[in-house]
Image (cartoon, rainbow over all chains, first blue to last red; front, side):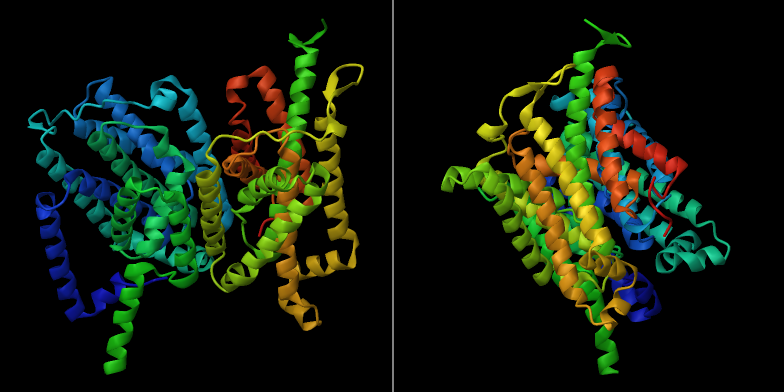
Length: 324
Length: 295
C-alpha cells in the first residue's frame, strides 16, 4: 500500500511538479468561496481533515479504526458546549474539542492496541458505540435534539465569524494547519517508525522499538486531529448531534479514505470532496444515500483498492519505467 | 411479595428471561461469526443484515405468499444461505489473497446496501409479525409466568447452537472444516475441495443468522435497522469470548445476555453499555478473550 510521497521525494522533476500542484491547490482553495457555495466547501474541508486524520492510522500504521466518529462527534459536542454554554472564544472551544478527543483517544487507543488487525477494528467500533450510547443519555448533549444554535462568535475576540468569508478562511486555516501537521508527522523519523510497524510489526519489535507506544502515540494524534475537524464543524454548522458520533459516520470516513486512496496524502481530501458533493446532490433526490455509499464501498474494495489518487500515482510510477 | 436485594422477584426473573432471550441471539450470531472467521478469516459485517434479511423473509413469506412461521423457519435460512453463497462466489472469494480488512470493508458495504434498500422500501419503522398460534399464551412455572414463545426461542437457540457445535466437533465434514482452519493448503493437498468448503461455511453462517432473524421476528419488530444495532454488540461479545472456540462463543453469548438483563434490574442506565464495559475489562485482564488464544 506504500505509494506516493516517498516516491515523489526521490524524483526531482515530480517533486517540483508536486510543489507547483500544492501552490495551485492552495490558490484554488483561497478562491473557492467566490465560485462555490462556501458552506459546501467548508463542509468538505472539515471532512477532508477528518479523513486525513483517519488516514494517518490506516495509511501509515496499518490500523483500521472503526470508531473515529467518537472523536469527531465527541469533539463537536465539547466545542459546541464550550462555545454555547460557557461562552468561550471559538478557537479556544475548538482546541478544547481537540484536547477532549485526544484524551478519549488515549483511553480508547490504550484498550484497542492490545489486539491486532481485525480485532482492533471491532474493538474501536464497540468502544465508539459505547460512547454513542453515553452521548444519548448524559444531559449535556441534549439527547436526540443535540446542541443547537451554537454561536460562531468572534475569533480571538476580534474577527466576526458570522461573516461567511471570515468563517471560510478560518476553516481553511485550520484545515491547512491540520494537513501540514499530518504531513510533518508522516515525514518525520517518528513517521518512518510508524511505516516500519505497518510493513512488519515483528521486525520493528525485534529492532528494539516499543511498538505499542508508537501505535498509541499515532492513535492519540489521529484522534486529536479528528477532534480538530469535529470541533470546527460544530462552529461552522452551529450544531452538534448524535449523527456525528454514530457508527455510520465512522463508515463514511473509511469510505472517503478508501475512495481517495489509503496511504496517500491528498487521497482522503479527494475522497471527502467526492462523497460530500455526492451526498449534497443526492439529498435532493429520492435515491437512498446509504445504498450508494454501500455500492461505492463494494466497487472500491473489489476493483480499485488503491483508491483514485493511489491508482493515478501507480500509473505515474509505471510510465517512466516503460519509456526509459 | 418476595424480594431479592430489594427487587421484587417477578421483575428479577422477568429480566433474567429477557436477558436469556437476548443472550440466545448473541450466542447464535457470535457462533456464526466465529465459524465464518475461523475458516475464511473474514469478519462478516453483513451478519446483522443477514439476520435482518431472515426476519424480513419470514415477514414477506407470510404477507405475500401466506407461508406460515414453521415453513419460514426452514425457507428463510435457505434463501439467505443461497444469497450468501452467491456473494461468496462472486465477491468475497476474490479477496482471500489480500489483507483481511478488505473482507470486513466489503461486507460492511453489502450491509449498507441491504439496509438502505430495505429502509427505502419498508421505511425505518418496525413491522409486526405474529407468533404462530401454537406458541401463544403463557405457562405458569410456579415462580413466574413465562410466555410460551420466549421459552421456545431459548430452547430452539440452544438446539441450534449445540447442533452446530456437534456438526463441527463430531462429524467428518466438521473435521475437514477444523483441519482447513488450521492449514488450508495442506488439507487441499489431501484432496479436500477447500474452496467449496469456504463457500459452504459462509452459506451456513449466513443461514444461522437468518434463522436467528426468523426467531426474532415475533419478539422484536421486523425493521431494516434491527441487524446493525445488534451486530455491534455481538462484535463486543466476540471480543470478550475470543473467536478461538465455538463453545466459548455460545457460552459468552448467553452469559453476557443474562448479565445485561441483570443490569437492567439493578442499574438500568448502564444496561446499554454494560457489555462494552465488560469488553474493556476483559481487554485489560485477558486481551485474547476468555476462550481465545493469542495469535
